[in-house]
Length: 86
Image 1 (tube, helix red, strand yellow):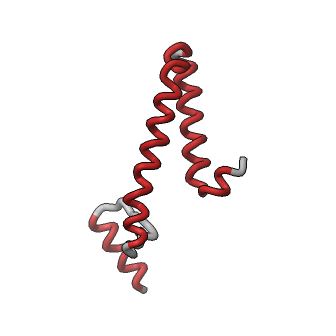
Image 2 (cartoon, rainbow, N blue to C red):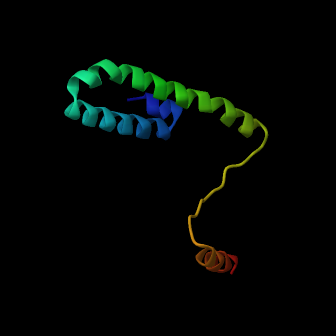
């Protein structure tokens, strides 16, 4: 229980999504899930760990992530930006 408090809340979300995916996989095919589950989990954990290196380099370079990402059409985006400038 204490691991997400140490590494951050994103880890808890990753664990929940991974557990849900494994549950669905076990429901569909228990034998394959037992054989391939640990390998898939290790690969996903390794992939998350590999991203930490570029993330640390960007943080040390002073790159700040955006506060908000919007997926809007050009016209709606222009209206939202105009509203936020008021």
